[in-house]
Structures are given as C-alpha cells and as structure tokens.
Figure 1 (tube, one colour):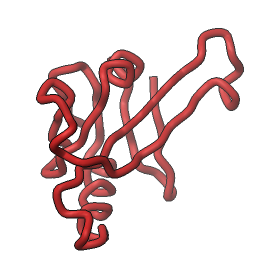
Figure 2 (cartoon, helix red, strand yellow; figure 1 turned 60 degrees about the vertical axis):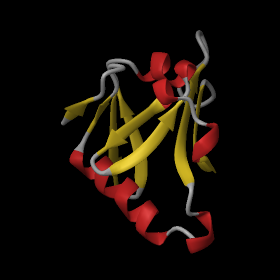
Figure 3 (cartoon, helix red, strand yellow; figure 1 turned 120 degrees about the vertical axis):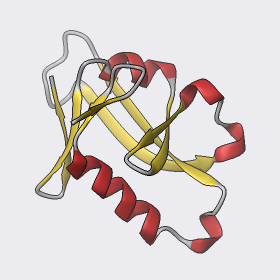
Length: 101
C-alpha cells in the first residue's frame, strides 16, 4: 500500500489498473490525465450515497496541487475528492474499484 501527500491510500492492484487504462487509451488522448472523482453524501445509505467516476481531462487544465502519481500513472484529484478519500484506501478487486475505510 502507498499513501499520497493528501492522505489517500492505494494498493498495487489499483496502481496496476490505472497503468492498464493508460496503456489502453486512445493515442489521440495524449495530453490528457485521468481524473478521479469521489463524493460521499452524509446520512445517505451506502449504495445511494457514494458517487465514483474516472474520466480523461486535459492535463493543462489541472492545477499542480491536484496532480498525483499512483504507481507510474499521473492522476488528478480535485480538493473535494482529496478530502473525501483522505485516510481511505483505493483497491482494484474483481474488476471494480473498492474504497475501504
């Protein structure tokens, strides 16, 4: 397991999944970075209160404080996502992202 400077923890399996996404991306997407977005709504049940998404965004639009390296893959996490995932672990298991508290 690894910890980013913002407090997000990730496993080698998750870093490997990101590396696969970068390897499989469209060559026309060069110059884009993978953005991770996470929102957990307070008071909501587990299934309806979490929203997770990964999407490609232009790298030149990403502020330096939102850039991180997971394994060898650059990623972007906005401050809301950084706060929501602080001290949580991102894992890749059975073909899905798993977020552990």
